[in-house]
Length: 260
Length: 188
Image 1 (cartoon, chains in turn purple, blue):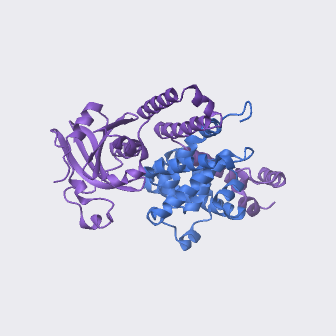
Image 2 (tube, one colour):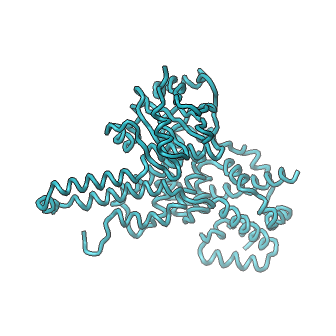
Image 3 (cartoon, rainbow over the protein chains, first blue to last red):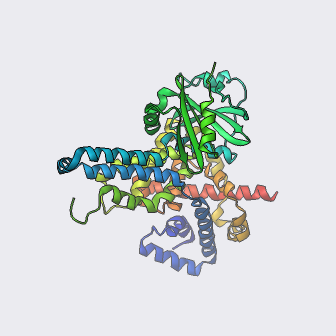
């Protein structure tokens, strides 16, 4: 094998994608050609360094817990679905329904709401300094023209009336493709994100929609270390997320009066 | 359900758990917008779960999920027209002018220097990833993070095996050149 033939095959050779015969020919060539041996070794070193760096990182536990819970609950349902379910119904339909409702209540109580998980992700970016306000004061006209009725400009004027809340600015974000007004601020010195979206957009967040429609005045959830609270103000949903207590955040959201 | 056969959800989760970390890291690197990673992963995994009855036990579950996730990310990229925003392609003429690296002794010296490689910071690697096209980035990450085989790249991206090798070779070439440029800037 010649040098240029061997070097054309560096990638597949390092990836163990060559057949045994070609690999053997390359190895024979490398034993006799110091330049090629050096080039191959250099490429191997780069691959090792590159793949180690690209592959670094941990999974986000909340995302996977949420997904596993969704899939497991589907499993529970499928196990209840078979034809012999009627036998169980005979054993006490009413007690089963009560137990199922209780189980759902417990499960829903423990599992973070879809909206809370989505909001928490961006709030973490804010905490990490990866997300900053884009403007302070009125929404720039150029930006407002991009809303296409999916977001109300007045959403950006939403503020809690509670003392000790200071606004740092605002920006537009997209949660599951839904445009939201994102107001970045601090409450008693703690970074808080205030998120406002149209109530109609709740269809993209079924578990939050269910809770809100159940009539709770303020819905709360946890996403990891973050506390989440939300309530309906007019035709908007106002959410807050922060690393603080449930009662603090609940009070903050309850104090929102909405745009005048 | 046969005696001893696990329920589908249990089986699915059993196969999913060992792949979760790699899928998320792959998605973060491929997507280029961390804030969308959550959506892409959720969509892809739920899509895979919905199609699990069509998954063949003797196929690679890892490759199957990487394929679904890649398609999801590509679709979202198209949807939000992010490709144009997040990629700046190297000019073809500029690529031709790149030195014949394999033959450059100085280059292999640099690559073999542990200090130089250690100094190529993660940010440099991330910046270098930006120089790749979407397909080049996908094949490089499928190889480096997914540890998939070429025929699995080919199936995932629906491109011929020969093109896979071409994309991967170009991806490696651009990465090493970009990293070297970062390194040169750092030493100035």
